[in-house]
Amino acid sequence: MMRRWLRSPILHFVIIGGLLFTVREAWRVRYGTPGLTRAPIVITAQQVRQLQADSARQWGVPPTSAQLQALIQEAVDAELLYREARRLRLDLQDRSIHMRLVQKMRAVSVDPSQDEETLYREAVRLGLDDDLVIKRVLRQKMRLLLQQDPHPAPLREQDIRDHITRHRDRFMRPEMVTFSHVFLSARVRGEHLEEEAEALLMQLRSQSTPPEAVGDLSDPFPLGLQLRAQSRSGITRYFGADFAEQIFSLQPWTWAGPVASPFGLHLVWVQEKVPEQMPPLDTVWQQVASEILQERAEERFTSGLRRLRSLYDIRIERGDADVAQDASKEEQS
Figure 1 (cartoon, rainbow, N blue to C red):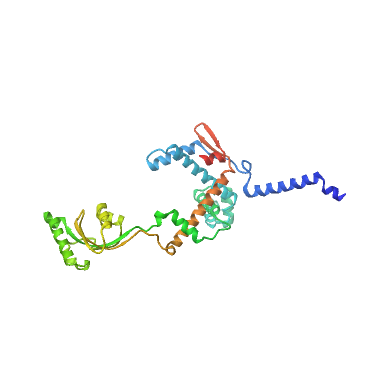
Figure 2: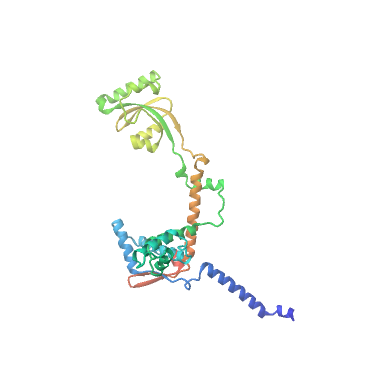
């Protein structure tokens, strides 16, 4: 009898049905049921017009269609994060939210001497928690929650190297040059500038004058007569692009020139050139690790936000048209 009962299709049906119900309920508790447990998110036509007006006021021109769509999406996401934070009751253990509501209630209560817990409950009952500051706090808490990784993968050296390779332009140390110069001022030398520069260059070369001994031969120069570890962009900023280009083309350990700048002419001794290079790994490890962890957190946030959007019926009102957007349409937009 027992063996026959265990083979019964009815028993199998009941067991399978129970398992499916359990799985469904577990899913509902954790993720919710689309369209049933969450009220639609509606961005009204008035809100859309306000977004347009705010953007125009900030930037001086009305937003384009694409820019307006991005603003609407931000508004949807802000409302979504706030609602989910409230669903998870992230406000209950937040002392800053608790105190803000107590203070607001004390300002309007007929009996502000009541204890904090009573004032807090009354503030919630009256809807005083519909507050811009509280909403901002809850959105941030929800963002941090979505960014969390319950099982973070440890960073490997290869992760660091791969990140540096992907962002090579940011981490590459530029070519650098250290040089000394003798400056001949166009204002001081006048029409004899080029002639005196050529003569002084021949003197420096013939006497093998070291760069440390040229102070008395140079006209005063505000940046000094030796510039250390200068990048191309740094030299360009002070002397101009043509000057920088010539400096990096000169051979080291010999007097060269004259090289023209907006100030006059320069006789240049290049002491050292350092080619562009990647920094040692240990000097940027902490920076790179921080960037990688932030990237991963943003990826988790984006993924979590996408999943949460799928749980809502999202409606955008444009004028008289009420446009319903499901999750897939929202993603495509």
